[in-house]
Image (tube, rainbow over all chains, first blue to last red; front, side, top):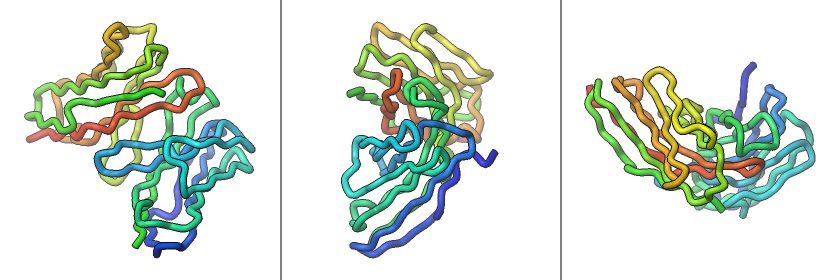
Length: 115
Length: 111
C-alpha cells in the first residue's frame, strides 16, 4: 500500500490564482481530512469527510472547497489564493467515521506559498 | 469544542536522559488520546495512543500516562537518542468527532 499520497509537494501561487491540492489513499478508509500547519499553531482542521458524498467544515474552512466523489480521493480547492493561505497542508485518513477513536494516517504534505 | 494544550513548547535533553511532555484537555468526555511524531519535512506519524479505560501504556522506550480526573496525559521517552529529535503532537477526541491537536512540542536530543 502507498498509504496517503499528496501532490504536488511544493507549489507557488500568485494572489488570486486558484488550484487544487490532490490527496489519495489506498487503504479503503472512510474518513479523510485536510489540515494546515503554521508555525506555532499546530494542526488546524480545514474540512473533513466521513465517506463518499459527505463533507463538512472544520475549524478554518474559509477560502477552501472540498468534494468526495470516491472513497480514495479527497481534493482541496483554493478558490482565490491569498498570502494568508501560505502554509503546509496535510491530508489524513482514518479507518472509519469514528475519527475520534482511531489512528490518523497522514500524507507527506504540500508546501504552498502565495505571493 | 475540545481544547488541547501542550507544555513545554520546546524541550532539550541530553542523549540518554528522559523526556516528558504533558498535554491537558478540556472535554471530560474525550476518550482517545494519541501521540504523533513529526520528523522534518514529513507528515505526523502515530507513535502511541491510549484510551480512557487505561491509565498507562508502554511500548519499548515510550510510554503514555493518563489522568482522567485532572484531564491530562503525558508522553515519556526514556534513554533518548538523536533520532528522537522531532516535533511531537498530542490529540484528544471521542467517537466520530475529529481529533483536536495540541500545538506541538519540539524535542531536541543533544548528543
